[in-house]
Length: 265
Image 1 (cartoon, rainbow, N blue to C red):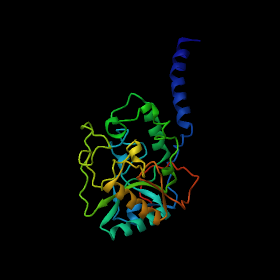
Image 2: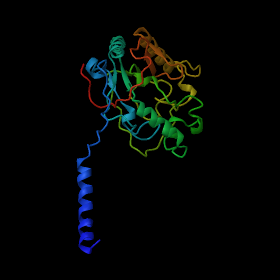
Image 3: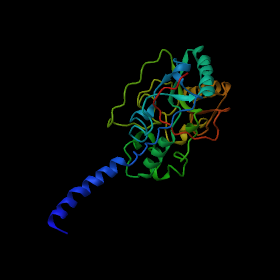
Image 4: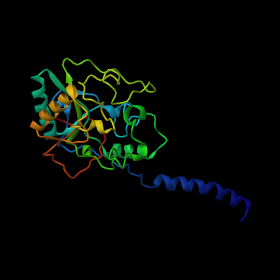
């Protein structure tokens, strides 16, 4: 091959490669899953229910905003949201209201929990959320699982507030932590009534009917349980805050669309 031919070949090959790449069909990005029409924003059904969406913030047991929470928004299936509206009406007549901490939870958020639980070196929130449980036991003790009823869209975590409710102050990452079962006046300030522990407290004291929880905290738990059961919900016995609508429309489907856009009412 002559020197001139070699030079021309060196110039032509890169151009041909660029043309080939440009001519290839563009890879199609996988579309983001969207909520089915049966999902609604709770605020469209009942704007009087307070929302403090903890997993949108770093004030949760992971210490970071959880994957999949792009807006601080409670999404639920329509039947669950309507039933929650009935529970709210019952409480409003008594001078109380509901506050939700979590509602629909995408599978990617559950996966985030699982990854966090496997990282035994990340203990930054232990002093508040699981001071008496070794992180290595969170799976064995059932605090973390690879599937969650929240992903089916009819489960929520919630509490009761006395009205008018004073807003809860923002959590400051790195601030001193107090155990979730400390007396209410010592725990992170929450505008809910005293339930005996804080939300997401990984401890047996969070069991709804734990006999060690007495007085006003027990009465508050029983009030929430009574109102929610009359509205068609079932409580998870290990968590005073966890309720599922019994007639949930998707009992076997675990969704993964992000908590972002507001579905139409």
